[in-house]
Structures are given as structure tokens and as C-alpha cells.
Length: 363
Image 1 (tube, helix red, strand yellow):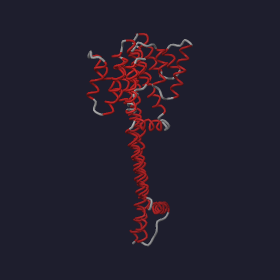
Image 2: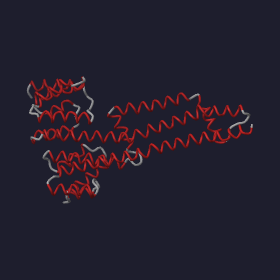
Image 3: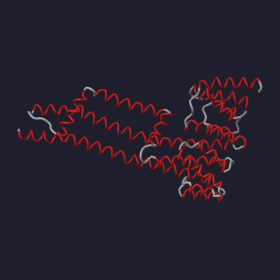
Image 4: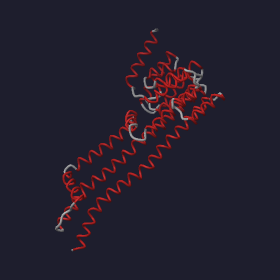
């Protein structure tokens, strides 16, 4: 290794220590889109990186791009520069390396932009499906706690002043409220802390990932997770095929973009079926990666020589299906929680007001 290259790599390692946060899908999409535009405009990759560095709005971006520029000046490889920066996923680096070796870097960067934009949209949909119900549930719980802790003891005093006492459910709730009254502030602080934690987690990539993993364990989310993985897989295959790679190569790389273990097992089954002579579309159907209509689209694309476009269409259909499932679930959930809260609050108040009205009528 030359002395210049060693010096360059040492500088890059120093830069990496300052910028270690992995980029989010929307940031990866923005980088890919800018790089695609730069290549198509006839500028060199090095000139493009320097322009992006000069236009960077924050110090982290400048550090990342400076590290890439220093590595590219030594290696003349965008994939190597991205690896040196330490903030890009290995899958993306591999695809860029493929684009450089096949001369299709502009197409690869445009495809990566499309892929990561779609990835960002799906992550937001799943995050919304998980967090929104939790936030509503916390709000409902807070309203009920305020009613029990603050309101019920007031009714208890009113009954005492009228020379009687509450009985049944109102009495139990009043006693619970009295016992919790000293801890009411603590309960409200806990609720606020939960809301704050959810808000903070929603602002970070790792936090959103943890919330999505939690959501995948909830009833009804399993199907949405499969749709997310299927769309991600189809997008990956579309990019791979349009970059000049084969179906077999795409399948071997697919595990890098799929984090669902069950879907990975289905991919392994698909590869096994193809090794036994099954067509790609039939293997997708039998391994239950794609449903019948989607695997038929793949078969049509294979016969017409447009499998990359067929895969892109399948990815769009799965994404639209996922968004529809999330919207439908939220549309059912919000009124359901409102009804539950109304029934609980109304039931508590009626259990107190009816006896109170009877007593006041008898006076």
C-alpha cells in the first residue's frame, strides 16, 4: 500500500470517529438522488461530492462528505468512499459497487433513491400504526384517572353533606380516588414521561425501529409486516434486475434488506424451489412470498422481458396495500377508543348522578 493511501485512510478513520450515526432512509434517498443528478449532468463523482459538501447545512454532513472526498481522492471508487464514511448500509455500498463495475452507476443511484423513499414511507406508516393507538390509549387512561382521582372524591363529599353516602361502584371508585389522591401528581408525571419517551423515540431511527418491533407483536400487525417485507423485497429485485444482475444474485442479496426472520425463511424456501427447477414466479407463489396475482405479474414480466418493471409495480401495490391497512386500522381504532372512553366516563358519572338526583328530589 502506498504512503498516500495509508495517509488518506488514516484521515478517513479520524473523520469516522466524529460521524458514526447511520443515515436514515430519507437521508439515503436524498444522497442517492443528488448523486444520480450529478452523474447525469456530466460532472465527476469527486466534483459532485465537493459540491454537496459546500452545500451541506450541518457539520455532520460536512464531516461525512469530507471523509468520502478524502477516500475517493485515493481510491477513485464511490463504493469505497461510502464504506469509509461508515454511515451507509452494506447493501447500498454493494449496489453502488455493482453500478460502478457494470457502468450503470446513474441507474443504480436513481434506483436507490426510489427504494429508500419507498422505505421511508413504509416505515412512517408502520410507526403511525404503532404509536397513534398508544398515544390515544394514554390519553384515555389520563382522562379516567383524572375522573377517579379528582372528581369522585368531590361527589363523595357532596353525598356526605346531604347526610348519605355513596354505595356500590361509585363508593369503590371514590375510595380508589382517595387512596390515589396523594399519588395523583405522580400518576400524571408518569403519563407525561411515557408521552415524552414516545416522542423522543419517534425522533430517532433506533427509537422508531424499537417501536416498530413492539408493534409487530400486536394483533393484526403481522400481515402488515409481511406486506412491508414483500414491498421491500420487490423494490430490491427491481433495482437488482435493472442494474444488470440476475434473479439468483438478487435472491442471495435479499437477506441484507429484510429484517423479518419469517420472511427470510420464505426466501430460503424460494431459493430451494428454484434449485429444484421451479420458475421464479412459481417459487414466489409456493413459498408465499407473493400472492397469486402478484406472482402472476412477475410471470408476465418474465415473459415480456420486463421483470424489473413488474417487480417495481408489485412493490407499489404492496406499499399501497400496506398504507390502506394502516389507514383502515386507524379509522376503526380512533372512534372505538372514543366510544370506550365515553362509555366508561358516562357510566361513572351516571352511577353517581342518578342517586344524587333521587336524593335531591326527595328533599
